[in-house]
Image (cartoon, rainbow, N blue to C red; front, side, top):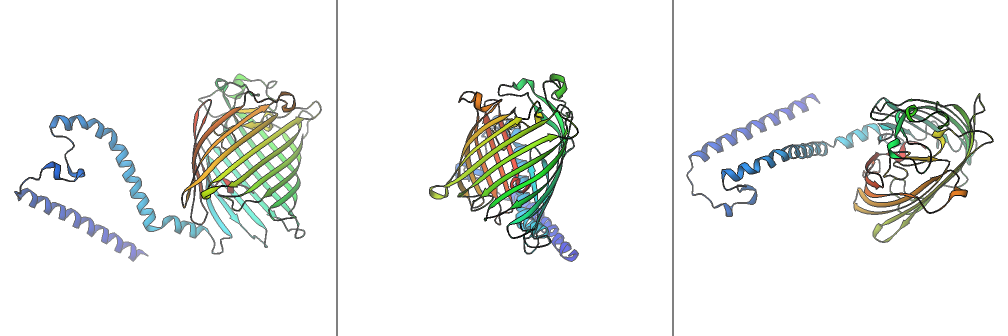
Length: 437
């Protein structure tokens, strides 16, 4: 390997010397040669003078100076891309991190909320069907997220199995604007959300793509002062009486879940649907202040249109109800805003007990590894959706972007721009569908 590297370096040095020497000799001969001058209009466009006089060239100098960093940037990006492509660096790294049978693989992950990191996936861990996932990501201001999960859908029999998972997250600059659909942007505060969560469930897979789950979960949440000095902390504008769960708490919950996936592909489906239905009953540990029930319905339908166009229709309903004389921690309220709902707003811009979200997305292929899309979505939070429901005061966002994938489907990146009534946001995600089961 060292001999190969030395040979390559010698060739590069020889080529560079030859190129410089040839250029110097050509320049010397050009100075001696007295050929007839070729008219400017007969020269190729790229060889013509941009100005006919010193004054005109001087006038173009500020523009050239301003564009110089951009030219250097794009030339540098192009050079790096050519080197990576020529040496197949991405392919070699993927091959090194992926087992020959592709049951073990490592992928890069990134979201603005969680930061960047890696996810490790091992299929058929100890026996066929037992799958393991672990991920770790890091972001600004000591943002950390760790997840580990094991699923065996055939632990007891061909139809019954188990699922166990745990995660730890430290989110140092979460946004809080208040509770309700009319919270003001200027009331933005931030807080530190630190959570440890563990769950264990019995699962059933009666049909392909269908999952029933029933299990217990434990969560321990601490709320502290935020680390974003550009905005005031939570306790500067709000009091514990206004914000239930102001300091966090420990809770256990009983969870039931139904999930059905009939998509023909995971990263870029062209038909099928996803149906998610869940019910959660939660109660505080060593206390009698907090307790709630939560119902969630999320349906996405993928409609195949002409010329490989795809229409995605989504509807999400979330209803949270407090138990007798108990409160709901503010971080467990239904939330709208961020990459998964109302993408033109800050993450969890609006919070309340209930929410309704609808959206439509139109996708069309622009390359073998790129799909463009445009979207429009509307949503609103309610204190009680049954008493307050109306079509007024719904928030909306719209925009578009690109979904990228590798040839083997191992890389899925999203570049997106979204507009809302408050701002324009740029969103980016990498392998977001792989983070958890």
